[in-house]
Length: 135
Image 1 (spheres, rainbow, N blue to C red):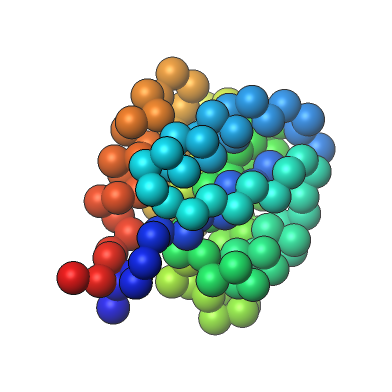
Image 2: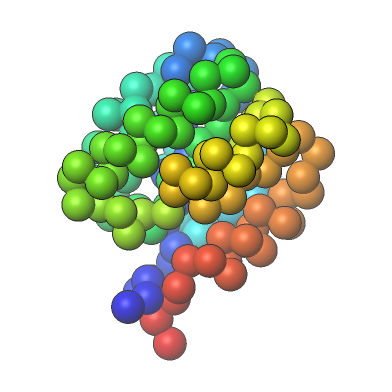
């Protein structure tokens, strides 16, 4: 089953990090590519992020994490999606994430990680290629 209508992506800044320029750049790139983007703003809890994704019928959640809490925050979002029978919502993200942490994050269920310097077009292309759309 694919998405009917535009792909809907929640872009979120979980945790205490107060820097959201990258999240806003990604949100704008996704929007400019024709997707519906819901930006949650700063200092969101994993519960708030998942609640928003479910309420907004999102197809994906993009997390921006610069605080170093990526292992905990991604894991909690994935856990909450499972608990709420919303595992069909793909989770991807980016930020200051060491290369060594990427394989464990993917093992948790994070679909993709984008590190600093990734062109926005690469993120847009990944979302388009990995969120199935109705034919």
